[in-house]
Length: 336
Image (cartoon, rainbow, N blue to C red; front, side):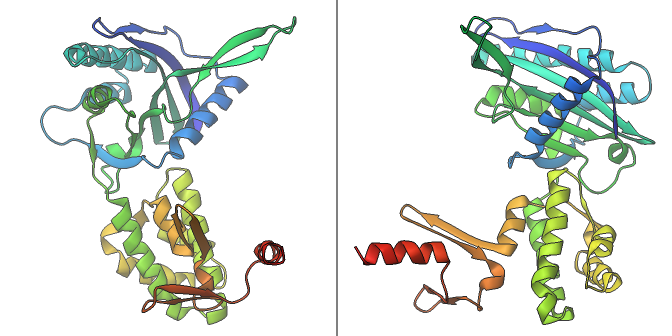
């Protein structure tokens, strides 16, 4: 997809006073800096484990975001007017929350629209600033303000094509604000987000099917088969994209793709060939890991019943052949 428009606004919240907005009147230039900024913001947004998927609430009047987007997609307003109107409505929601004592904060609100053919995606992300220090020409320290792409980042992505064509899978990707219930409430009201997809259950069902299919895979190919599935699914998850069973089947080597596709379609009929994945569940499928205060253990699932054996009766693990680095540490310790 190509970036059509990028714009930034500012939202200032002060305790016990009215929220203020600073609206840009023109989009930002789509230069190399803008491209880098968007790539950084998308990477931060997609990396958040709190990212959930859903749809606009079907109850009552459409949320402000859905209303403003409808006017934008109908060419009743341009992107600048769309984002400005949305910020004004968010300002009104926040001012209504002042009785709850919103903490002082300043949000940089960055929005852009990407398109490709009939498809379009809109991002509305917000975050605060952080301070770093640099040395100027006279070797004096100078404070530098920059966008916080860490935990402070939150926002929403709308797949306009999926929304308008009423596809079954969730067309909203949502990262809520962190540690500020009033801000979270206002942003949820603004966007109308409703969680509509249990990615954990979806991923568990999918992986159960993947594992069931191993009986149709030659024993020497099973580990490679599992890793191919997880690698593809992880790449899709990192791009906030659904897993397409047909595309997955075509991407695998050493496996009857047509048989796999039909098998998985029968195993997950309610998903209609597209599934959103849970990153943590994918990791656990190919790797076992656990940690306590003084003990951490992790190993590939392919090693279970090969080099690693578990006895549930005694709750013990035995390992045949430990890593060389660990062996050297143990021998040095024992020979002291």
